[in-house]
Image (cartoon, rainbow, N blue to C red; front, side):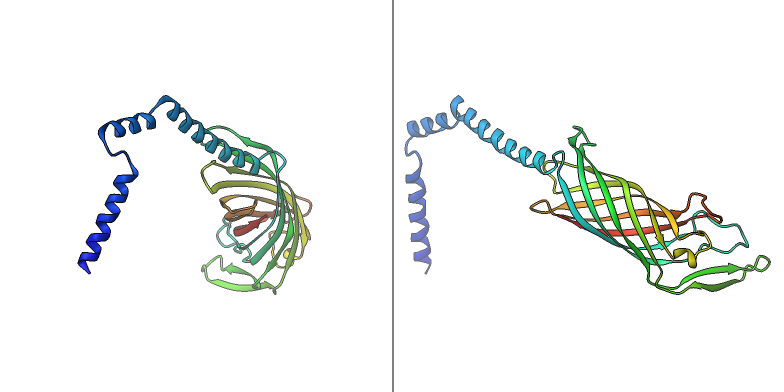
Length: 256
């Protein structure tokens, strides 16, 4: 067994030696050819073409006018923002699911040439929020501080929304398959969240949201993302009260 292994190793060594230059003059010629100006120029040209092809694919995928369709889903819950005064009822607690199909349009192509290099997208979303638990509010005794949980509305409550004024910026790199993103937008909604929330008083409410996330790029213009948004509903003073609902919203998305 050992003799067979040794014989195979010797045969492989002979083959490797016979494949290259066998004497000093041949080895010198071989090295000279490898490092000749013509060969160096050819290597540089091949590298430049490879880089150009990669850059071309990058510029094409994120070129001006490119589009994506997709859907964003998530989970959110209202928060005590701003804080209520001592003795006043806490903010209404609403846990909800978020489901909004979206359309994205690249406005300018790839812009910038430093850490802020990226692409600016117009993003339109339309969908709904629906509560997954009863709306509740904690009422505190102003003298003792004792808290009582009160149910203000039963689930599900639904709020339909449309957000047409919205932009998203993706911080891109030609060698990265992922990008940090920031998003900010405004729109309007209609539904019955106001039935259980004292912070809003009309079925019609404006929508504001701001946030960010990470997007990972797949093949054929597809991508997946995770993100966070601060989500706000209020009626801009159309009717009182108009304290507004504020919520943490955590999202996942798919675009194609």
